[in-house]
Amino acid sequence: MTFWMNQRVRAAAAAMAVACGLGIGAPSTALAADLDYGKPGDPVQLVIGYQPYYTQSWSGVVMRGKKFYEKYLPKGSTVDFSIGLQGAVIVNAMLAGKQHIGYMGDMPAIVSTTKESVADIRIVATLGVGFDQCNILLARNDAPKFGNGKEGVKWLEGKRIGIPLGSCADRFAKEAFRKEGVAPAAIMNQNIEVITSGFRAGKLDAAAIWEPTASRLVEEGLARRIASGATVNEKDAGFLAMRADLIKQRPDVAKAWLNAELDAQLFLADPKNAMEVAAMAAQQATGFTEKMLWHSLYGQYPAEIGGIPVRMQLPFTLTPDVVAQINQSAAFLFSIKSINVEKLRADALMNDMAAQVLKERSLNSPIGEVKSMPDSEYGKK
Image 1 (tube, one colour):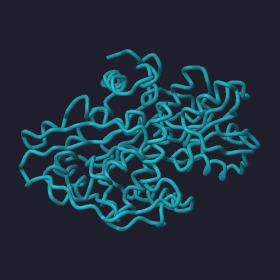
Image 2: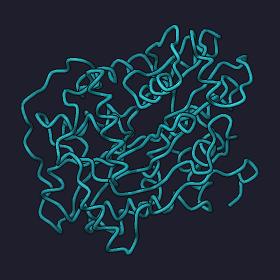
Image 3: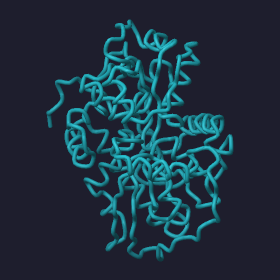
Image 4: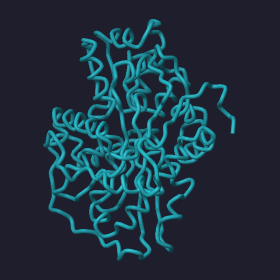
């Protein structure tokens, strides 16, 4: 996901996105050699790419803050966390062998598995599934008051909307327009920084974006939330990806990380931990208050603007419903020429390890859910 970046960082991120195939016609390179992770049982050095600027991948935030992995990895192992300003940055680093495990949204995760000519990356677990982590529609503050989310979507007929094209928000918005028969006057490819400036200057009618930026714009009074994926029955998701050479050489490490990830998701789902999660996110993501971050995952919205009782479900494994959602997203990416296959190769999705971890710990999917809470719960521990 994109965040406020200076010009130099934006240029580098754009180059990385093209290298990842998130742009059209990205070149491929020769297959890189497998990395050497040592023998099973040996200490391992891992670099983890994660996104504190995308709420649905916050089990990575919890993992960095709580260090659950120390319980499971071989003694003497080291773990470095690298923040990705957008999923494409993490994908590029994994393809280059600079990162080994990545926390990301559905679009970059899917793209990563289609670059096997560069490096083999697999999706191994689900970080979360919801209706309003990526799928959020915001409108300018002087937009009419709508009776429900669908009225808000229909208001976008003939309007100017900013969307980071090729993102999960792009897929959601276009599905919402299709389902409600809406034709905006202009869909502009804008990152979060430009969308923010557009709302501030009064030059933008609406935008489709993700959390926690959606909560930031609302709480700063720059825009109003008008609908979500719940309005049009469109889900969003985040995934955990691993390099295949790590899985092959070090199944002990891959399984250890999944056990720690399970702990992180269980921690995330416990409402007693909401304030601690927000505090960890505030330490790892700049430009947000704790309340903005708390609200992005745990906050409660009215149903008429796409609010739902459950902000995020935690399947952990790649359930049939999750796989169907991946296939739908892959078809969208193929339609906009972000990937060159309409359906992912069979071994791109590896569910066996996550399923085994659940079985060994006598748990079933879903392992939990993050329920929305009224503002009165903010600050309680």
